Length: 293
Image 1 (cartoon, rainbow, N blue to C red):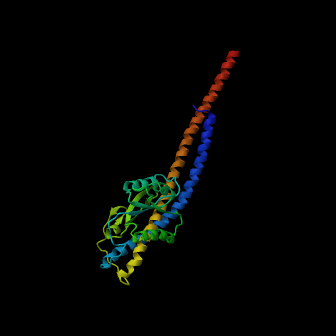
Image 2 (cartoon, rainbow, N blue to C red):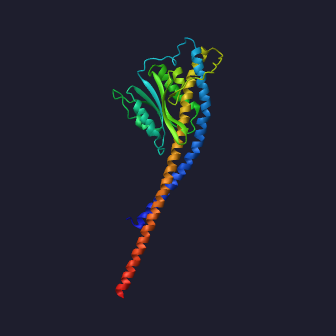
Image 3 (cartoon, one colour):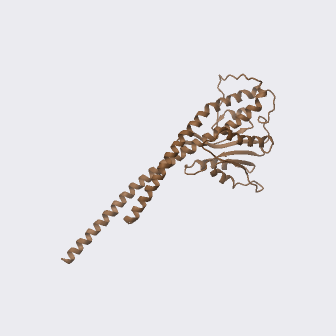
């Protein structure tokens, strides 16, 4: 059995750890509320814009816009959104498991977050080439303008035919306890992809009324389609940030509760060891007294 000194040292160490995890839990909870609010507030706008694009495509006539034109996929760019820090449970692990399941040597990756960047930087193509095209900085207060830089980078690669499709992978925020890894294609844009949400197939409502456009749909495509990709990237980043802070808050709460439970067990063990030590001393004193007598 461990000595009382060793148990006291362990109790002190676990108390310090519990204080740290409790502080991290409170910080994550504060960030989670802000990130969750931003992610949820953006969803109605994202859904409405998807309906607009969905209505615009059939009215665009025979216009062959590059972002609508499907072609044989030889190289696909995947924008992967992770986290900069750990201590957020299996969030990054689940996402990278999804990436690994879908990985192809012809894929090219763009990363956001150090945890996924470190993994993607190790992936090699058939000729031993590095598959990581670029890495972008992750910020809690990331603006739409900064998200457009990522979209413009990917769109430029697509229009130059360096890649044939654009996909995004991130952790979708459902609630503070549930986050799902999502992998979906955003270019070339098609009505099939527009009706997909969270890897499930949905159909447009029967009472859906097409929008009226001014000017003509053809003239709007050049502005609306790139904006659609920018918006999808921005909303995915917000979703991932809400998932990250939620997962970290839950993980730190669990760590704090485990520390408290361990402290109770150690306190009981310490009391037993202390009682045993006192009993042993009393027996030694009693034995010595009778021996002298």
